Image (cartoon, rainbow, N blue to C red; front, side, top):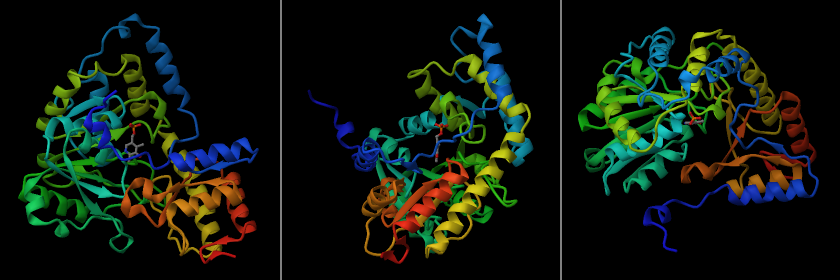
Amino acid sequence: MQRAKRIAAIPPYLFAEIDKLKAAARARGVDVIDLGIGDPDKPTPEHVVEALAAAARDPATHRYPPYEGLSELKQAIARWYDERYGVKLDPENEVLVLIGSKEGIAHVFWAFVDPGDVTLVPDPAYPVYRTGTLLAGGRPYTMPLTPERGFLPDLTAVEPEVAEQAKLLFLNYPNNPTAAVAPPEFFAEVVDFARRHNIIVCHDFAYCETTFDGYRAPSFLATPGAKEVGIEFNSLSKPYNMTGWRVGFAVGNKEVLAALSIIKTNVDSGVFDAVQLAARAALTGPQDIIERMNKIYTGRRNVIIQGLNSLGWRLEPTKATFYVWAPVPAGYTSKEFAALLLEQAGVNVAPGNGYGEQGEGFFRIALTVDEDRLAEAVKRLRQAGITFAGKR
Ligand SMILES: *Cc1c(COP(=O)(O)O)cnc(C)c1O
């Protein structure tokens, strides 16, 4: 059987080896503390589940949904953006409902990238920016994210010929996997860069509401001129503990959304109306879940950061996302260190190189287990003699 060349272009799944080690440890009876997966552990709010149940009982929801999304949901999204980020959107042509933001992120490349076209993608990053480019036959150009620059790409380091060729630029703040945040000045620089080089900006705002210690993350679209150059992907998944529901949206530039919509009308038929009505209930109903979850993540963050710092790391408290991105001790690769944690402490973390070459030398912890388990993980590291200075 001959697979399409576009599949061969996809890099091998870098977590495969660590997943095997994790399964083997579990088979040996090890009580593995899994800090590898970024998926909220708490349930969706009850009123959202109720809204789904009620809507599912209404036969009016049982037919094909409208392609671009239910008007009721698009209006709720526009209001939510205005209230939270001060961004005005026309619900009819500046909002597009997606089957989770991942779907839209993967498809936007098909709308703008022809074979051989260049995209600008950060590294480390959510892998879909790179693989989405490759599937469309494009060439991803890496923008390294380094601790020295606060994990913001250096746009002045993009060679002029590359900038001239590039069709799309992807960004994600608050950032997965580094937990970095972007100041509004950086977004202003992005708008200027995109205008000068005629590049479409796609900002992934998946962690829009997962913020701590009074920090509020700005929407890229709140930057003057942003709507002329780009769109923002957003999702119910992380703020409302709804990863399994598969509902997200893109907002912003209407020509970009119209092109993405052409791909979608030929690939899918939208999100179940009942799920869209439940999403509207999440956006318009009680919002206490956001503060409640952020308090939980803050407590967990403190346990991990204080815990790792007591073992020799020097991590600053993160302002957003439910991740901690930490360097591995000298003498280890990311993969070796992740394997060591699993073998000697029964703790699973994500090796940083799974998010790109620049992630080598780091590991990612997801704060999606309870505080006592995180404290137990730190205790096991201490008992195994694992510190930032290396192995005892
Ligand atoms: C979780 C995540 C997504 C995908 O979210 P869905 O809406 O569930 O598809 C997109 N981008 C980043 C950076 C994420 O971490």
